[in-house]
Image (cartoon, rainbow, N blue to C red; front, top):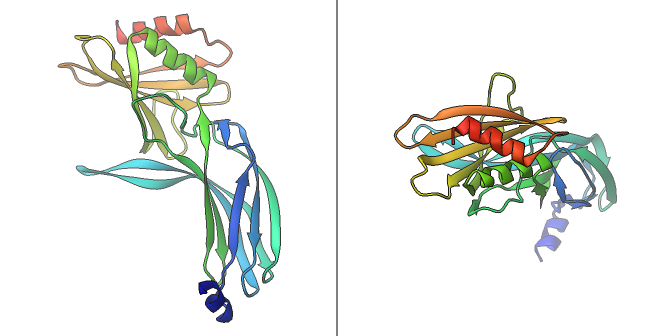
Length: 247
């Protein structure tokens, strides 16, 4: 009934839907899919058709914290075109995810990471259309190796979330407006550690790791190491972590 009323008034809007061919993939990989959209009850001019890579990030404001949707990357798929009434179109796409895309597929006690593709159509003099499709972002081999090395050092992955902001170290910095934190806790009593928060800044051939170490009765300490993708020896990585953490 509502559609009939809106159609009679010339208000029935444009619809858009995205189909992802490979929603499960690693950061840095190519995402492929197709955008399907259909004109409404009248001809419309479309300012732009966009794909946005988004996540939910924790924001600190004074003493308060809240979650906020964050656009990591935006791709313009098509701009300034006419969409006739009731006409359907299908547009294939192929886009490369940033290497720093937060991972979602991790085993831990609490995983607060969500990543999705938002399809957005900017309709001139009309109601904008959008669609949301979630991604399953797998850890890279370097991340998997590091988590295994931390486990060999006696740590358990407790929680994972995303923080708004930028990581900066001497030889690297994050680039997408947020960073992911993996919180490890010791599996041993009286270890001296409250927690170790780990963040990855991944590039094409290497992954930088920042560790924020929280020990009992000590101030926090920031440490960093770099994992070369062609040399991911878990035993060697374990020794390097032990050396950094002095355990």
